[in-house]
Image (cartoon, helix red, strand yellow):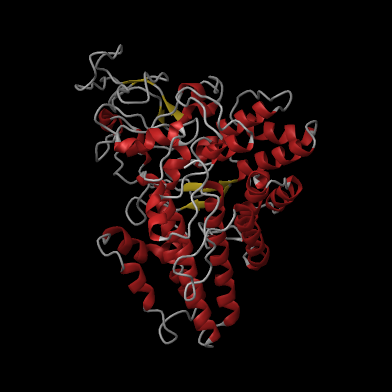
Length: 515
C-alpha cells in the first residue's frame, strides 16, 4: 500500500473533484470563493487544504500535450515520431524535435496556459490569504507562512517561464493586475524572481517529512535558487556559479537527503519514501491521476506485456544517439525498453497485425534503437521506449508512481558543475560526479577526469526524462548542434515562440526573435 502524506490526504477531496468533474471549468474558483473568516482557515490543516488549487496544477506534468512534453521532445533524448496516420498532430511534435516550432503550434499554447495558470492560482490564493490576514480573522503568523509558500511556488513557475519563453509579463497581483500586461525582459524577470526567493524562502519550513512532501519548503526554494544561478549566464549574460554552489551546499549540509542505494528506487510504483526527493508530484492511480507515461510510450500491443487496463498510444521513444551514450554495465540503461516484446508470460510474442510490410523485423514488436525516420513514416515499433518508471502489472491508464521534480542526485551534479566551471581541475567536482555515477555500476567505474562532454553526458544518463536535458544542452552550448533528426538550429530556437493566440489576446506581448 502506498504511503500517503498528510498533505495528500488533505488534498484528496479537491483532487477527486478536479479529476472527475473536468467539464466544470470554473469549479476551482467556486470552491475557493467559499473561504470565509467564519468557516475556514482556523488551523494549519485548513490552510494546507486551501493550498490544493495551487498544487493540483502540477499534475499536468505527468501527461501528454504541453510543457513537459515540449521540454523533452525539444531535446536530443526524446521524440514523438509521426507513425503513418498516428501522432501527426499538425507537425507540432516533430517541429519541437527539429527546433522549428511555430507560434501557432498548440503545444506552445498548452505550455503557456499551464505556466501562467499556476502563476494566476498562486496570485489568487495569496490575495485571499492576505485579505483574511489583514482583516484580522486568521492568525497572521500562520497566514504569512503560507503566503511565503505560495510565493515560492509562483517563483518556480516563473523560473520555468524564464527558461522556456524568456520574455513574458511579470504579474504578481490578483486584484490589481493589468488586463494586458507588457512583456518584461528575461534579465529583469530573473532579478524579480531572485528577489522573491530571497524574501520568501527563509520563511519556509526546514523539514522533510510527510507534512512537507510535495510542497514548497526551504530546501525546495534553495533548489530553485540553485537552478536559477546555474543557468544565470544563459538567462542574464552573467555567470553565478558561486551562488549555485552555495545553494547546493545548503541542501547537502542539511543532512535531510541522500542517494538511494538503487537508482530504480526513485521510480518504482511505491517510491514516495525516496531519500532523494526534494520535490515530487504525489500521483495516485485513483485520487491524484494524470501520470500516463506508459500510455504515452508503449506500443499498442504492450498492453499484453503488462496486462494494462487500457491500450497504450505508441508515441514517445528515445533516440539512438542518446541511447548509445549508455554502456551495458550501467544500470541506467534500464531506463529504456529495447528488443523483442512478449506477453506477460514472457514466452508469447507480441505481434502487430498493422506492422508495415517494409519493417525488416516483421510483425513481432521489436523496439530498436534505430528510427527509420522522424516523419511521416516512422515504423510502428521503431525506437526504444521510455521505461524509467516501473509500469505496474495490471495498471490503469493512470500510474501511481510519484514524479520527482527536484532530486538529490541532481544537487550533487549541479554542485560538481558549479565547482568545475570555477576550476576545471577541482577534484571535489570529480568526486561528486563519481558518487552519483558509481551508484549505477557494480563494480564502480569512475570517470578519470571531467570535461564538458563527460559532465553533460553524465547528467544525461542520470537525469533522463526529468525535464532538464534541453536546459542542460543550452547551458553547455550544444543545443543547436545537429543531431540525428535535427539538422541544426540558430540561437533563436533556445527560446520558444510566444503563442500567437496569446499575442492576439494581448497585443502588448512581444514575440521572441526568429518567430
